[in-house]
Length: 206
Image (cartoon, rainbow, N blue to C red):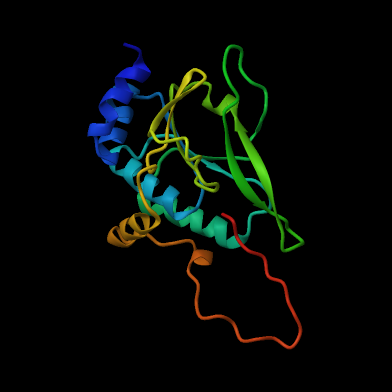
């Protein structure tokens, strides 16, 4: 039985925290990396990771212009969860390692001067090179309906989608239960009053 078959066979019986604990502390101790953004599902995963081992390497994927709110929010989350091993990556690692596949996250990136966004690929081939297990939790794009398992093989890596079973409401409930703040742009107030002249405001795809 391969490592993948072993993990795939036991994962349906494990809760999300138990699966992450098994991967981080037992099966891939010292060989697990987490990718994240600033969306609520990512923060929920980071909370689970921090409860298991706050020294687990975390890579925040960043593309395009970063608004000040996002930088402040990222710092707040890192401090709140006590994450100890955090870096940022702009994902320009396009060279695929010999015998491997391209490993990437998909994100929306902001345009600094216009209220527009662009679709970006964040390549992480060199960053992931020392690791065997990749906990993928950027959650900018909808997951393919064909992906029904939390554990997949991608090249030489075991790639894990820890929240594939979670609904948006479950993520929100988890955030509130653990008193985790949402990104300031995710909390919408009452609509602003109509303006005499149309104005454009940037949206934050953190």
